Amino acid sequence: MRKFHLILFSIVLIFVGKVHAQYASPTYSYACSSGDLINNFSTTLGIANITNNNTGCNGTAPSNLIYLSGMTVSQIQGQSFNFSVQSGASWGQGFRIWIDWNQDFSFNGPGEDVYVSPNSSTAAFTGSITVPFTAIPGVTRMRVMCRYATVPAIGDWNSASLSFGEVEDYNVLVIGATPCTGTPVAGTASFVNGCPGAVVASGFSLSGGLTWQWQKRVGCNGVWANINGATSPNFIIPSQSAPTYYRMYITCTASNLSDTTAPVFVKSLTPCYCASAGLGSYYETITNVSVGSLSNTTPCVNTPYSNFTSLTPPKITIGQNAPLSVSITNCYGYVYLNYGVAVFIDFDRDGTYSVGERVYGSGAMVPVANTTATYPSTFQVPSNAKAGFTGMRVILDDYGTAGNAITGCATPTYGEVEDYLVEIEYVPTVVGDGFHCTSEGNFTLTASAPDIGTTNYSFLWQFPDGSYHTDSSYVLPATTGAAGPSGTYTVRVLSYPCGTVGTPDTSGIKTLQIFVQQSPPPLL
Image (tube, rainbow, N blue to C red; front, side, top):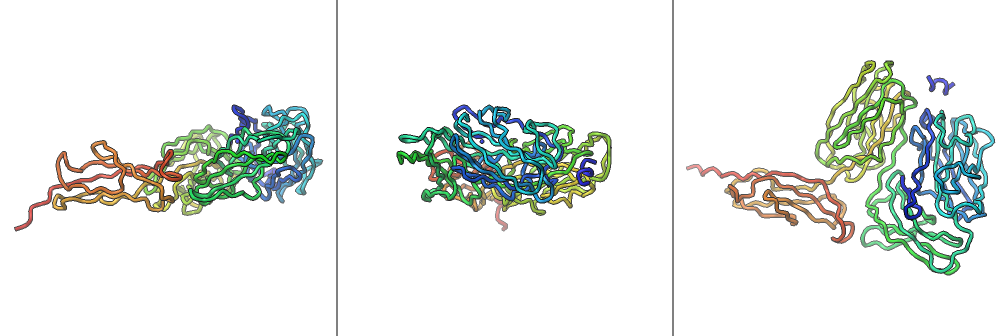
């Protein structure tokens, strides 16, 4: 009955020049926030295994798909691994699993349909998958799909007409049956930003008898240490409190010889967020979101959830105001209840959208058929905001809820959710700017970088005459005229991961004015 009412490597490099990012996706009518989802998936008896349990709804509508690029099960040609898969507690699901053995970016090849459940259920389904000798060695894609109250058909992996369910994609590392000899090649390590973030290796040796071990070094002066359980070519970074270097060791057990990748530096992780989506989108639709330099216009279509985190994040600066607007369009000429709009930005980068981080909340807006309403606003980035990439969420509740009552994990009965990233820029603190009098003789202009999180930084000033300077503090003469210091100054922070070499990170620009005026004569 519930269903009846509802109806009313990212990029992973595998070999040089080869990218596994071109797989077609299915299309579902409803987001997995309906409760139709893959809650548990795990493998055993592989050389490396996957454990991804109690995950709830993670797939991005309308494909309801999440690619877990850092999770890999590995096995040698001719050997098997076991799996277990289970739905959530509310609605029974049928399951199907495909693996792209021939690495042609589809699941149509011979033997690539590797499992189908006997029925739909909330109970766990288990099975075993054997890696064929014909499988091409290397990292390839595995797709796990569920559908409500039915078993997915063999061609559903890219079907455009599904109703309820979810899809999870993982990696399978096929290892050649020929044993390794000599010194293996570790290849290249790289960081894949996303939710979750991962470090991945590419271009490494592919043969039997190899082991992998990821290591990390925290900060500039830390020591390299093995990461427990990080024994496959890809590693999901669960959390990180400080800038960290990662590298992967590969060892041939027969020769006991090893190789390692060059370190990859990860400054910080982009937070992950709760699932949020409309259960349906029928009346009003988000058709534009603009913040800072970003303006994203979307068509009038019923899309309960859209993930726009791949767009270039706009920069917003700590302590400064930023413009914001959201446009809502009634696309089909039908009106129902009032609607509300809310925008959240995770200023403290803790992975939650708190009520205090709601930068815009409308009232209960009255819909008008076949019209677009735009809601402009501005918000100030708090002085205690944390610099880096963070999430922004736009929620349209089309079921009578006012925007100022919408919470950050809302799943409106009718409505839409769009997720974005923004980049919060750090700016230095300056004292000594503003008005000065000639009677001072001279004054001091000083920049500082409180709470920047590193001791390896410098300043880059530009003075009114166009010259550049790198000290933190300057003594300036309190004189007037062309030779005086009056004018516009800018300063930014250049921070370095370790030491003072390499390409620095650049903060936002602090712009300031200095005015020197003649002191009035003393009173007689």
